[in-house]
Image 1 (cartoon, rainbow, N blue to C red):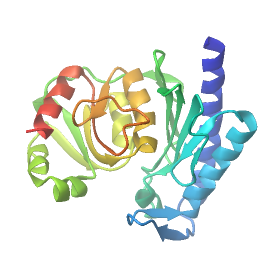
Image 2: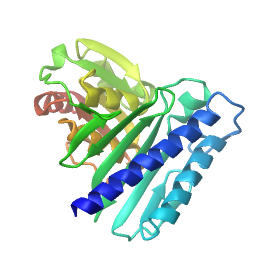
Image 3: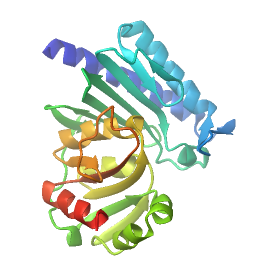
Amino acid sequence: MLQHNNQTRNHAIEIAKIAMGAARGFFRGQLGVEFKPDESPVTQADRGVETLVRDYLNEHCPGDGIFGEEHGVEGPDKDQMWIIDPIDGTRSFLSGHPLFGFLLSHTSHGIADIGVIGMPALDELIIGQKDAGAVMNGQDIHCSDQTALNRAILYVNDSDKIYRGHPEIFGRLMRAGQTRRQGHDCYPHALVAMGYADAVVDYDLHPYDYLALSVVIEAAGGVITDWQGNPLTLKSGTAHVVTAATPALHAAILELVNG
């Protein structure tokens, strides 16, 4: 089992290097942009990066299933699955903002055991492995020990969506924490894993958005669930998410968002 885990981790690292290099090649170039039915944008970079990842997996892990944001599911009943978000933050990417990411997770028999957050423009590669800790560019990382919401650095992701859907929750969030930042995409969660931020409230995420985050955050000592406190799995579907550095801080934020 250990050898298998090491092989899987090595594949994840190699995939991340390929994907991050490809994303950097597209970044701030001329991009063809289309819009999906939900009005979210997709570019040739999203599709191109995911194709490269799928090509690698089909060559090196031919028996594994694949679930990608852009090209759907292959082998949904496979015991080993790879979940891909080729460009997490396409709106950031197409607007030249460097805080877009690459997300990759691996599940074994339905349990997410490896998560990757790659930040191509920052050259930061964060890897979390179930029961084996988290690293950023090879250096150990860990969440903060913050337990008090009134002293926390809190990120509110996709605050415009939260405001439209739940204005009362948005109002409470805008009064919470010692320092508040409004953000998007995966990087605020990465900052919690690195100990720079303490919590993130996020909205309307899919498995390819949150599975990699869940492994990284938990490997770094933090807590991540949906707004009801349920664990995040491949079967969680669309979810609103709370990430926190400690169980006490997580509980305080759940109480806040649930009124």
